[in-house]
Image (cartoon, rainbow, N blue to C red):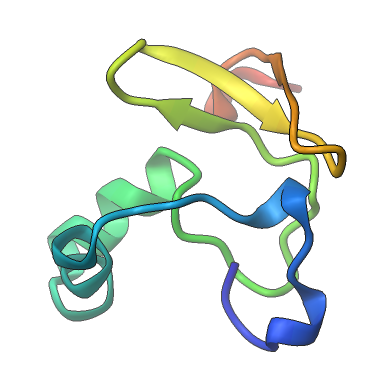
Length: 78
């Protein structure tokens, strides 16, 4: 999640490799794809925003206990 590390919680943290993190921050096309997948969030985004697990092709909402629950895709939740 963007912004202050004071807001970091298990429900808004994902582990990504250095190359992907750099690309999300420096390449507008990668940044847009990351936003569409829930990987790059605004500090104002809720903790219940789904993220795409790309290898599995499954959307999840992360929980503060380190777990995850299946979800509908980000754009089809409402």
